Figure 1 (tube, rainbow, N blue to C red):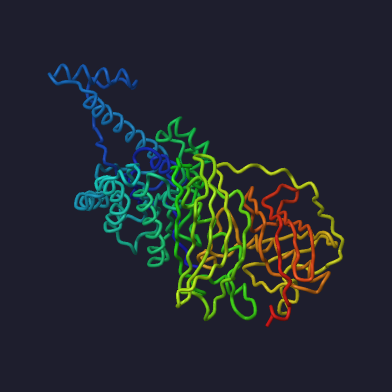
Figure 2: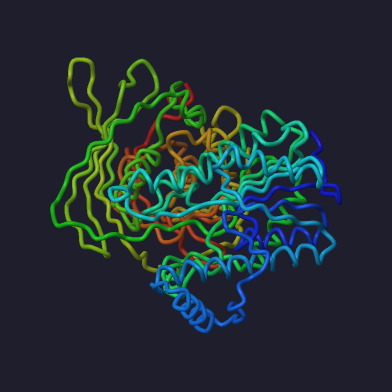
Length: 575
């Protein structure tokens, strides 16, 4: 791995938006960690001397002085004029305070009043600064604007204001430096670019371009320390008491200024990042929106290929990759959660596997997801019927999966599982990968769907397994990413019944339908969880069971009730 340069007294950083607010606080903390040289950029004017009348720091007193001065000059002290002068004075004070705090650390700081989107002015003024501070070795791009509105109300001017500060600002800064001399490129992006947020489509686009720019720059200049920090909400002046209340309701944690500034320092020290993008802060949980009364129907078309979904190689039955039923279900769920922001699946019922989707010559060119609204109550719940279908070249419709989904704004808390039993009886001593070896002697699944780490206990009525799903990459997940529902851990949970039927009856089974599935808490990955499978009935052709997925204390993550499985030939599965 290429080693990047560390901070030193000779480092010269240009910091856009760095003289005020959060970026200023981060710069001060960075100077405390390593005094070096900083060129701070901002649009505000730095007043060499303040007007004689501006001797007050109290807001109301200062504004009164401004009004009196305007009157003495025969001008009308309109609220807009007074506020404009007030902002000019207080901005200048904040800039001087930032410069003083940086220089107190032993670092050097210079402020340039310039708009980063003004290419000629930026080039000229930075060239002058470089003459007495030295070549620029680092960029911290913190400049940005907001114009929050729903997309149908945004103007071109709104978009340009937000977009250019981030995107053109970065382009201009990079054009002012020698990229081969650049040792650090730090971009202040946002979780809005990562998760999206209502009213911030332009801000999300601009920040996501910063994220992608970081990846591209790192590929071209591997010796440069590059990171796009996707910041969450900061506890600053922009986050009012009212906004804090909204964040609390949405369970969004706010980053304290001191903590966030220290996180920047940590990122500056972490020069051997495996990625050029990090997320710092809570996910942006979308707010529930008011739903209209009209019941609608949606159709979503998707082309599915083996190449786009590498995990399918780990789910091969009778020699062909087969779409897991759990993935079909999550296509339905994820689509509904996108249609109804702020609502999450609580339960689905009567999930049927009508005709599986096999990735061979019979695979349709496209599949259609139909979503039919049954009922909806604003800020409470949505009920829909979902069906996945396809058409063959002759136009004949094939129905693959169907279910009825219930999405809730607030997910109830489940009572702990009362019949928990994690005692080990040592009847089945196979562990880990051994369940999946020898051509699928017990389980045919590949690494994306492993692993059952051990069977804790087994009886004719119940089996309890310990599981641990190692997260696979986004690329492997393809068109079926893990979100609120994890299709891979759900599939893994059902392996318990496979082991039970093989142990007691030397048979295999495949899912047929599920009477009801409930999700209370996201199932963890990269750490153990437990599956208690209660067998309710067994015939020569089928088996019915309940699956309770929980932690070691019995806290329920999810449960699958009335899961019907079809007995299948082990030889056919491995053929």
